[in-house]
Image (cartoon, rainbow, N blue to C red; front, top):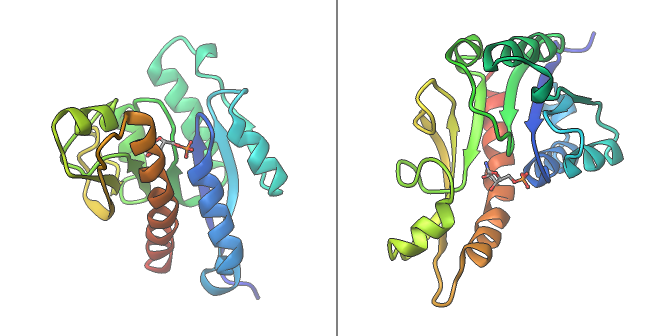
Amino acid sequence: MAATKKNIVILISGNGSNMVAIAEAAQKENWQGKLGAGIACVISNRADSEGLNFARALGISTQVLDHKQFASREAFDAALQQLIDSYNPALVVLAGFMRILTPGFVANYAGRLVNIHPSLLPAFTGLNTHQRAIDAGCKVAGATVHLVTADLDHGPILAQAVVPVLAGDDARTLAARVLTQEHRVYPAAVRTLLAAR
Ligand code: GRF
C-alpha cells in the first residue's frame, strides 16, 4: 500500500518561477517515491497569473480564487482556507503570493506554512527590498525561507541564500541575481520540511 501522501499546496499571484523550481525539483529528485510528497494544487488569487500556465504545462492542477470577489480579507481567507484544506495539505507554500494573511488563517497552518522573502531577514521586511538594500549600501543581499507567523516576515528562518551586490546594480539586476538563488534554496528547504514531516 502506498504511504500516506504528503500533499503540497502552492499559492502564487504572478510569474510562479519559484513554484516551477519546486515542481521541477520534485520531479527530478523523485519526491513522490522518496518522500511520498507531491504538489496537489497551485492556487492563484489572480486568473491572469503567468504561473498558472506554467503549472498547467507541468500537469499540475490549478485553481483560481479571486480576492476581488470577496467583501473582506476575512471572507477571502476563509474561502481560501476551505479550498486549501480540501487538499489535506502537509505543507502550504507561499511563492510570490501577494496577499497579507489574517491571523486566523496563519494560525490554522502553524508549522506548515512557508514563505520566501527576497531579502536577508530580519533586514528589509515588506516591499521594494532590492532597492532598499542598494540604497542602504549593502554589499550582499539575498533571500530567506521562513515559517509564516502572524508577524509579517518575522517567522523562524529555515534557510537563506546570499548574493553580492555589484557596482552598477539596480533593483532589477539585483532581483534577477537573487531570484536565481531563490530557485535553489526554496526547493531545498521545502524538501527538508517534507522529509521531517
Ligand atoms: C520572489 O522574489 C519572492 O521572493 C517574492 O516574490 C517573488 C516571486 O517570484 N516573495 P515568482 O512568482 O516565484 O517568480
